[in-house]
Amino acid sequence: MVLGLLAVGLLLGGYTYLSHRQHIENPEDTTIPSWSQLKEGVVKAVQPHPRSGERWVVVDSKATLSRLFLGLLCGVLGAVFLGILMGCSATVEALLVPPLSLFAQVPPTAMLAVFFVLVGTDTEMYVAMIAFGVLPTLAQTVHLSVRDVPEELLYKAYTLGASHAEVVWNVIVRHMLPKLIDAVRLQFGPAMVFLIAAEMVVGDVGFGYRIRLLSRLLDMGVVYPYLFYLMMFGFLMNVGMKQLQRLVCRWHDGGRRSS
Amino acid sequence: MSHLNRILWCLGTIAVILMPVQALADPPSFSLAWSEYPSWSVFGVAHEVKLIDGHKGKLGPIEKKWNVDIVLREADYDSCITMYGSGAVDAAALTNMDSLNPALTRPTVAILPTSTSFGADALIVPKDITSVTQLKGKKVYGLAKTVSEYMFVRNLQKLGEKETDYTFTNMDPQAAALAMQQKRRGYDAIAVWNPFVLDTLEKRKDTRVLFDSTSIPGEIIDMIVMSKKSLDKPGGKRFAKAVIDTFYAINQRMTDPATADDTLIAIGEKFSNLGLQSMRKVVQQTRFYSTPEQGIALFTGDSLVQTMRTVTQFCVSHDIVPKKPSVSYGAGGTAALRFDPSYMQAVKKRNGD
Image 1 (cartoon, rainbow over the protein chains, first blue to last red):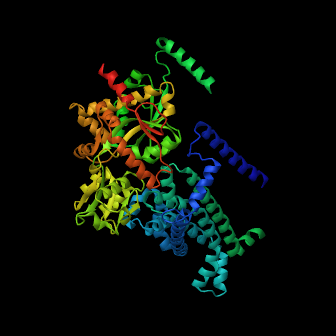
Image 2: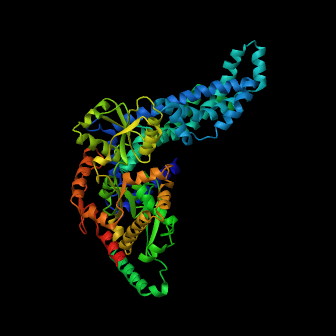
């Protein structure tokens, strides 16, 4: 904890020095803003815009986060569906594993133009892009963890008279869920990369749009707080997902401790 | 600091004295950031045909002539603005409009106009739209707070239309052109620049130009800007002249029938996949200031003053600049952005001798 604080302190000190050095070179510089410039930037981002009356942070958060969660939701649902099918049926497995492992290798950011062509440039595009971006990895995770379910558990459940559906729900899903949550947590980063890249090109609102626009206008006093905001968001999502895993999958953590 | 300067001066003087011995060993080097655009790709081509060598520490004939090392840094346009604004490069290829923001924090001298948009920025609509009033309530797509929006708004003003009746929506020009070419619903007007103007008109036959930058000639100026501080460094002015000399040398190749087509193809190579015929059109729509006379005429003429007044006003009213930058003309002065024809004049004089 102390070391962590020290590291953060060093980072802040380093930044202050960088900014100070740049301002000695050029007192008017806005590319490595000083703390007071950053404060102005924050105010600018948070207060209502004089003409439109919109608060940048609010409209951008709404746009970006709704796109992100919608995309992730579609991706996760699709992945769970496909993953369980692949794990339970050898036919589906043989059918889907090769294309999925191939698709997983294409970075969605490289396919931006393809997405524009196929799904236009509205919300569906962002959603499709994120969903396709995270689906292959997640589906493979689900698939592997389903395959990973210990056979004795399955036999035990069937011996106790469970139906197929009950086995899937009570054994397989429970076994897979904590791993899925872990995988989703790790996919937040890539999903954000896809989304920001797309917003930089076609967005008229959202983090990617704002960051590109203000970088072009050299208004880094606003850009840096935005980056900080993104960082905190990612951090909180990470912590949140871990908490969620602990809350929803009590058996997962407990199992690890007893073994 | 002054101490350091004095030492530098001493070293400079010694270097000059030792020059015959040293044989141009270490001329000062300055960097120029440029992006692919007809009148800026000129510098990439100059490197390719070995008039200059864009690598650090290597000199082409023009660099030797001026005894200065030109370091070329190619990047996309947005990055050029950022790089120049942060002081990472000494000079950059920017438009007059986009020079205002960096100039606010980094006193800037425009040393050379390279071209002006004369049709290279256009509003493209499907053929069934014949009047701009039909666009009320519809979205016009283009990159916000750039020359695209400027061209759109200026044309509205000229037509006596109210800007608030129209919606300009941000979108990357390439994506907007793609949407138009695919006839996607809701895309009834795009304000884009070349190569997307020609590309769209070529690929979707039922579109037309509703208006373009020919109605505002000389208002959108592509140019080379340089930091005042870098200009004042030893060799800075020679660098400015070498850059200008390079630009006119390539322009000469474009007018010489023996090299014209090759040069044009070279310029167009990375700019678009349009053919030679289209590139001929491109350089008409991006009118080059191809001789020192033309460049000097622009920088010393009265129209530029009016233009910059209009552009600055636009930038202030559209929140592109946080405050109004001071603009001046001619040599000397402390304005944020200064248009200085003296380096072009110097190059003209030396080459005329």
